[in-house]
Image (spheres, rainbow over the protein chains, first blue to last red):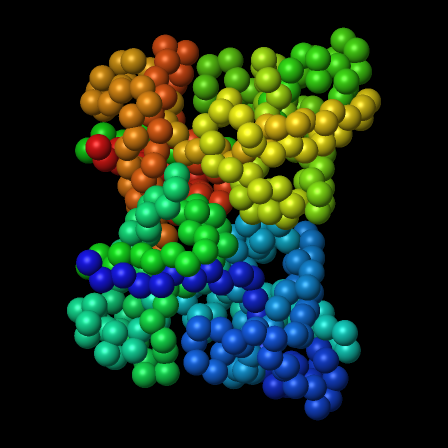
Length: 190
Length: 190
């Protein structure tokens, strides 16, 4: 009964160097506010507004470091509120996804695509994957016991890389649906 | 493999006759906008603002008919946004829950308690309960198959009454976590 740490990813943005310069000015850098579980990843102090056809999601954190492609990860609650029909996708799988406007203090960027609700997933090192008996891209289930909203998430994608640290990521809607608050572990079911 | 209709309950309020008179004026009545699945229940045209310590959830629908006790049902996403630590509770189980202010066009009401996130539940008639092999208050699981977010909800309370019609109710966070949109059926697992 191997268990994995379950972490909640709140709404966030990834930006390219080019977009960062437009949003925060030439030469701007992302400044780390808090390290995340995945090695090298951090929540930055830099925040932007995400603008959709029906509203604005203000003050959304940019996660660093910068990426090759800009991407906005919202919960489906968030996305609906600002009028964006975000599909459930894996990070980076952006073809055909809706766009939005990102507003920073120095300027704004229009994304033609890039707004998603993150598909729930587990980060494993190759060693973790061996221990859990799973492979990269495998779909598993994860059972979470909580006070009043226990559930088993299906459709959980396993992602394996030596750069990762073992953690499952769910969004705020999913955390609320499971009452998965605080330090929570889930049982991986093959 | 008996299946039940799964419906999403968006944020809503139940009010007493007394509170309705304060919120909408003496002699005010709830006017039906849309019938709900449970016989006699309806979404009304009357809407109120729910005020918490950190913000306002505007334009929340009142469900009719009026009740013996006023109650506010929010998703955990909603509740957190306005600064209320809503517990997951069954409808009517309000002892020790947080309060809020309800604002209507004619006046406002301060609830000392009554804000909850609804515990997921199934409405069954006695005949349905017999068919599914369950009893009132029994805890079951419900499996939902969707495109990308299949899951099995645990901690689902069965409620049995001849006044009901067969339907499972989940909130918007739970619907988003399962991509349970449109006409969805769940498999009841004992």
